[in-house]
Length: 404
Image (cartoon, rainbow, N blue to C red; front, side, top):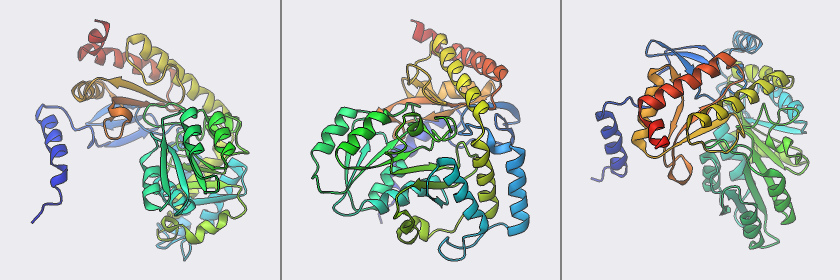
């Protein structure tokens, strides 16, 4: 009998060798207590969190928590049904109304996760005979949406306006085309040249979907995302996002001004055949979204944190994924898995948690440590973060090897 797990043997052996070397497993860490958006207790020790997507620090906002508690008391713990059956409560309408107000759109549809939002919208919009044109570094949920559907898939080089133009030019003029872009790419924290890319897409008669999972909350005048800051809101057909980053809870969504958009509620399988979000979750999301509409000071502080950390890490001698601070994500590029894991563990032992990322999740086979800043990180915490990086870089020999 064939063991269906055999295909994973190489990965199993690699992980075991890593653990046998005495390092901690970076992918099974437990947060014993979360104290605030920026601190947790890990292995009984106070730890600064620099590896969450809690960009705007909304997880402990008193109004958000109160809304969730109220909904839990009034509506119970869950809906036990799909949105198209018994699973649409008042709160689901309210969070969709909040999204429409936040984005200034006519339509909004909420999914149970951000992953499902991409899975559903991408697979439903583009069908057999259509084309999906996507950045090679697109998120897994976008790729999975492509695979679930029947459209032809065309990839272009990461952030290359020229390659996008060339590949669109090769497609049949009469075919349906959906260009998928991301405002912020989650591994390196770099942003897409949306102004130029959207112009190219429209030149070739394509519709445009922008994933703003990592841009919502702190890009643009209203915090809508990179597409707003780029001035292309009137040319983007669909914006997909998630509640698990700046909003501070869980869920996904798509907003649009397309007059036929509401038909998605009847034809999108990941929407139709999934239980809806619990009432407490949509209540927290709606409250958070409405507060993000007036979060200018938080956005400014987050940008200050990002620029300070990027500048400080570069001055210490770390190799970074971007030349300047482009978003709330700062990636430290490392030469191999051993160096990455040793530095990750040294940081954790000194009281700092960051994400470790490795192939195949990373672009071009990179190993990296990913820092995700929060608007609630204080100036003093950023100072402490830089001190910990300096100590860990010296203790592991990484900084001395870079200097040499």
